[in-house]
Length: 258
Length: 230
Ligand SMILES: Nc1ncnc2c1ncn2[C@@H]1O[C@H](COP(=O)(O)OP(=O)(O)OP(=O)(O)O)[C@@H](O)[C@H]1O
Ligand SMILES: [Mg+2]
Image 1 (cartoon, rainbow over the protein chains, first blue to last red):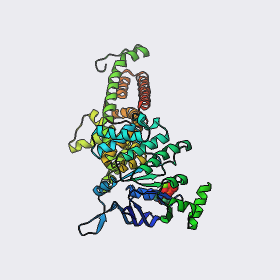
Image 2: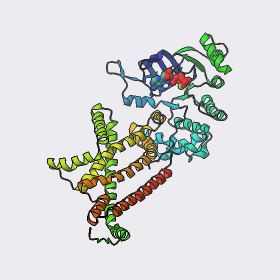
Image 3: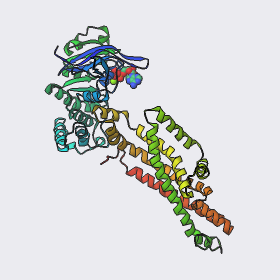
Image 4: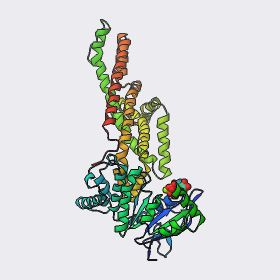
């Protein structure tokens, strides 16, 4: 396998007494499109949230782009907990699309997309606007730049959220159930955008979804997570058609029938 | 005679008409105390809210203690403290200022809770989106959190503005010549309490209704999604 851009090395995550991830080993190669599937509560969101630095880890090491995410190297070569400056630098490599979009409701679509490029990357306003308009064009919403989120459908909002994440030019884009909050008739338009990204970009993509058909279409690899560790993984055509583990078979039977 | 205005005690109506300008003087003081007290409460409340939210317990616990004390002891006690105890330490404030400060102190504790509730009501997803975009915490607070908290904070603040106005008569005990005190003096001197007190009640009713209406208008005018700053 080529150099991993993401590597979880014996990562544990506990919330108080509850152990959510337990010795998780998991890697993603540069440019790879990986889908994570698994039952509710198995730790899928937690994996993405750890990568986005929204949740810290209890044990182990997470590597992103060759550097530890939650640690930094001390003078003597050992790892010490990451400083905010280190986290800030590492976060720049990642972007995230949330289930509930999380657009800023008091800002226009354009402001939603340009705010961070201007404030964080130091782009000039015209530069940021050019970038935003290009991305809005890509997600098919060029005419909506001056609208507010509440004036748009959920599908449109999620497409804006994707544009907003892309405006930061991340190397890795995380999607946590991006279509789960949408009315069924709006799922397609969002999937269409993600599909285009998957096919046309060298972006590394990590997607959590319950849409098995979609997962099959766009992923290079599918990981079945259960109780906080990777239970089975493989190319979608293998994992979906001939799962090896009984638990994977059971899970797939349940979701495909449901 | 009060403030240079004579009263006409021929009957209730003439009395009412003749003391109206006097009550207006008192009303003016009431409004001034309300506005000054509320301004103090808004600023101090913000400071208290920030201190209570401080990461260090050395800061947050005393702030909570002060806030709790201010809310749970009667306004009158706080007022007496400022009026009778502070001078013993050489701090002598005019009665009006003492009253406004007492109101401001007590309401700063209420408003600090209003600020806190407004800020905490901003969904967690907003903080997470801001963090995912690498916005600095201070930027997140000023650009994302505060604009969304304002529409939640303002209506609650309006209610406290009405409430502080209704507390102003307490200042009469330290000789502030606000509306109720003026009415009482008129009553003492004309032996007619019914007319001036009824008028004060009526004026308060009008003030409260107008203020409440104003708050409702403001509430409706504020965009529910938040106020973009700049
Ligand atoms: N902040 C938290 N405090 C306590 N427990 C938490 C917290 N966040 C998540 N958990 C628990 O961790 C477990 C894994 O949560 P996670 O959100 O990663 O699951 P998931 O696989 O994404 O599930 P779903 O498919 O329902 O989204 C769950 O049991 C959840 O209750
Ligand atoms: Mg989840």
